[in-house]
Image: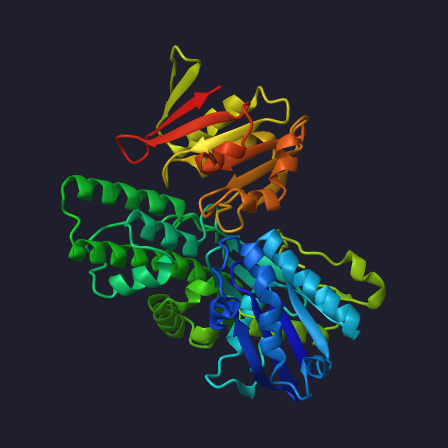
Length: 360
Length: 152
């Protein structure tokens, strides 16, 4: 079967074609707006407004995604899909609406079933595409699964059983990706913060500055990164006043900050594993690209809980993409209706949900 | 909590921890009739989100109120008699006002059952009505201390 997936939850416009046959997957295309040379093609500056950008990008991105399908022209090619999956939420309402309305229209005109996918569930499934090539056998998941989702908008631990999801802990203020962005802003390093901080941290000493590890002893699985941000703010302010903010110092600050974030994420994950005893651990989301987090997590889980299977997404699937939405959609077909399969007669009820919850 | 009244109807608070910042928010919220608009101004880490969490607690919001930076706007239903909806907006990532207008900001601003709280409101000052209550946050001398000025 062939699934066309559309993802427009935030800044990225993405579409993908995923083929699945006898539990082998073949990712025929995986287009993300930043890969499309849209600027050149449209000869203008892309507006800063995310939603307007989405409207301009969505059709070129979908067109590029379906080129791989058999057929003489786009009209014939797009008829060769079997299902459509789209991100319903959570995310930016205006951006989500572009994707959902496009998917609705396509599903209606092509008369194909439409699946509404939770963006966070997509991030969880992204770990199953852990083949460097774009094809391979789908990994069978052993339940229960504990998933750590870390991105610019979310930081949560989710316990997934066969038929239900439960958020067992989440951030009380800033998401970890947001904390990286804001730390980079405090240090005047640019955007996005995650990769910049990680790069500088590699050259720094993480033990140089003693930053707090918020909520480490809170006896629950919630996170908080706001206090860490404030501690960093005061540290930088004082160092600036003393004129001690050298390149080496900035690298040391980055290393200390990264270590503090990773320490909290890992401590909470390990205590959640201890309590809920999952068979599989999954990491997902944009911050899953952080090497320190990946390596330390894998190493700690392997030593302390050797029986747990660890799944982490390939680097190219850590950010927002449509391949993961396609896969999440595929599992919705398999498990009948999970988040709602809509038939022709109730297309009108389908709409974007900016605050969509993960728990079913 | 230190409380002073300055000649220009400006109330100034010095808070010494996040709990006190939340209490300042609750004190302010006691007078709310619905339809208020709060413009929060201040640097990263100066207590804005914390203040909104204090409002949410006072209004009886059941959800966790965390940073709306990523999605720009988060509406929360409350258990308050008059302010039925707390709309939490963050302009940190914003480059112009249009994006918020696209999200339906004007409807919320006009709605008498809404309490609209806007972080980094100075970025969209020109589209906010005159009745906006401006609240300025400053970092204090030590890591827990904050200065909050309310222009009412």
